[in-house]
Image (cartoon, rainbow, N blue to C red; front, side):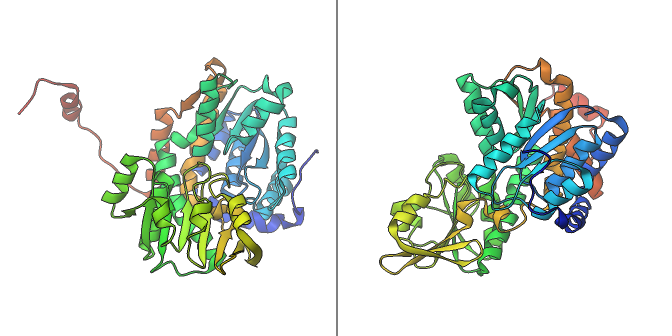
Length: 419
């Protein structure tokens, strides 16, 4: 496979307008792109990116290209690609893109292979499928990779497992761990965009319904907060006693999934783990229950168990598959259990991805300079980059903050002064 593989390059004009709309709300990335254009810190660098192909990602790719990088892009999820955006990157910016919304698993992995065929020196991943393929199937390319970045929680978990097992071959910066990423993207982005996807897919009124949120990490927190704001009765399920206690203190009911299953109207998994909603839960769910996932992979919902319990199933709306139980109940699975916010909606708003992708761009710049001196481990984003992104975002919002006076600086350094 060479050149590109997108649905239709004739969609480029529409994609360009949507990229422009998103770019207006990404002032931090814009300022970085402008500096990159002057300084060319990525000149001659080959970057293989496996990310959700959205308007925001497209603006990141253009920023990297402006900085001098040769960029090759594939999708990190079969349902998350915006075909017009993929077309625009190919047609307007001559960036090789391999991504088609709704592609099957074979095509998905062939697209990853196409990016690796370019021989990237740096990887930029979302979920670690690119890195995993590189380590298991492409040793011919692996030796020339200097370093990489990882965008999301699931990918960071996978990469840390690789590092612990001693199989990770190059250093990777966990962009997800930046405070300006997970405190904002995961919480505010996921909270809003997940509800957006559910509402677009179902047109259900959230107010008055019982919404069960599985997992109270930063994504779960954001979703629970936004569902409550829509008037839902929110129930949280957890395995971590500290997170469960926090959910209680935040005003939510906390129940085991076995107790939540019979009372829930809408279920959303946000854990990053396997089979969170299982056969025993499907057996007691209400007629008309809606089940969705906002974690990276579609394994959080035990879809084979649902299929085994169902006497039949049918597509009742775009992204809504109704499974008919033997007792007449219907359970509605959204987007084949894949990321509902990207499958049925447009993913996170541009203003929050602005910070996430600013971290990506600056982390890549850092790795171009430092990557070869780092051991093959998973690293946090340097604090200076995190602080810089926050400062740029505040400046773009027109928000000023105080600075410590010299007296205050000295006070904080000392220990002698007491009550």
